Length: 295
Image (cartoon, rainbow, N blue to C red):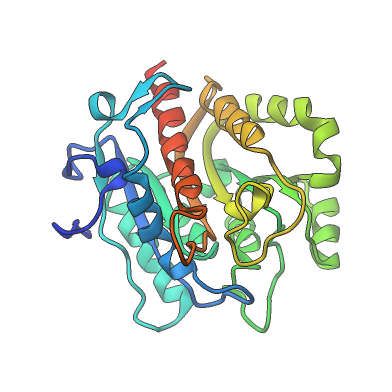
């Protein structure tokens, strides 16, 4: 199990907390090994943590006080030794397992890390519903000869037996499009159809039963809001729509929200840029999760 370096920045600059006393774990996973276009996700987790120190510890939307109502353990980043991607992901899974069923929020890093974060959960993959906010389907079987690529991560998650709800997809290969059309465990809401189906999307989330995991690729959000990612695509979720997804999930009394991640953020070369916007995503996720748990 990784422990926080005394000099490491904590989320919201909150006081350090031991894993045993924590309600939630923040786990930086700065993997950047299969990125195929824009570079920089390696620095995403540290930039998010640094920018979060400029965000208030009280959230008016959820009426939630982080200093009073939530104990967070900030784990040390899981660094890569340059070996195989699969080995790194197995290490991520092993780290998550050691937190014994606590809510783990991963900070990426490329999207590939989601497989390791899900693999380490103390729930059966066959029982797990994964909500994916993303511009890309990430359902290729291989990409550039690599099956453990950021472009294949949700295919590997599907291979584990999970159910998948995709929101905001607007970039697919033909093989992905055909898989979505034929695989009953995949429910995709394409961006060009999304706004006319928004009520149905929220209803779908509200009908989920059992454990749920949220993976939020920042390119799923409209680039007019957050362009700092390796492969931005026009269209996507507004900030308000993203918050509505969180609220629909946290208010579903039949669902158990077990973990989440924020991935594919590329820090601005001259902060603040989009760094604070990206940092609000894990803050909002934790406020939403904790409020739902409290209710």
